[in-house]
Image (cartoon, rainbow, N blue to C red):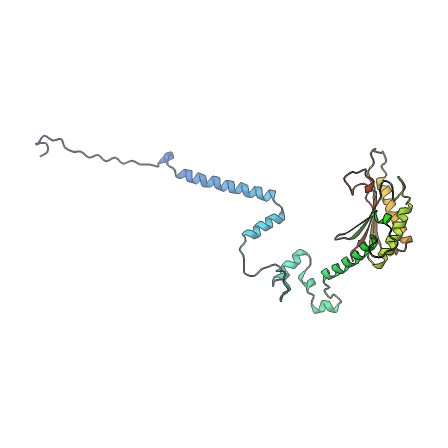
Length: 278
């Protein structure tokens, strides 16, 4: 009928367009981005493992580990478990003290292992060290300590014990130059130290230190000289009244452990006497 009226027929053509096929799609880009992200995370993990210490890695592991209501470590309190949790038997053996040693059973106490509080013993030793320090500095009524001798004494308390350091100065040496012969100053210091430290029974360690020399010698006597001076100090202490059985060790350190940055300073010529902790 349309043709009879002189009108052209209407033709509708449908064209199907396929997108995303082959290499023209975008799905591979998402997969590639995930792969690159995973590789970057992997390399960051490898870098962290090589750049951190064991303690830091343990902290990171603890941070990402799931938490539980019961703490596995000490809370620092004084309740039923004395600040420790019910998992102390698992934790304490790892830090070297041992739960059974901290809380001994009756059988251990019967053998004499009473589980003495180590902190209390350390506090008692620190009080004794403080008394000795005051005596060495002339504050404890020790008449033998003069102002001149006190200028050559430095004391400090460490984990090893009480360190009594006696050092030389430009105008007041402890030994004759290049020899182990003591001066009158060192003899007075040793008599005073032997008397002051006689109030305790701690073992004693003696260390000799000397300064470096500006000229390199073919036979550098620093080791022999430091050892000889330490042994001379031992003899002076024993002649001053210290029991020989208290001498635990006598060591020469040459010029390896400096007291001041300048290796040739007279201040590095020194003797260290350590009252070792019980």
